[in-house]
Amino acid sequence: QVHLVESGGGSVQAGGSLRLSCVQSGYTERTMCMAWFRQAPGKGREGVAGIYISGGSTHIADSVKGRFTISQDNAKKTVYLQMGVLKSEDTAMYYCAADHFCDSWSDTDFEYWGQGTQVTVSS
Image (cartoon, rainbow, N blue to C red):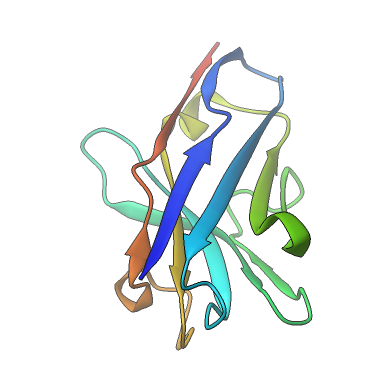
């Protein structure tokens, strides 16, 4: 079992920045990848960014490419989502997810999920 805890959400004005953190605990040795997803009110869950734990290669959704980056600190078992040039459409609950197999970046392929952290961007 893997336990994930997100932090760093909050309210920010458009154009601002935030950094989200996700700390994993538990049986983390088998975690192959971690990712960030978001869900805005009335919308489906959207993949934002992902990272392979071994090697650190990343995947960034087109909707945030050039504005968001994902990184990790393996010693701290933490993955970060650095968000810049925030827009009102970035307002959502952001979720961290982890998986042992990483078949794809689809949310249906992620087994472990955090409780989420809210990001609100005001224009």
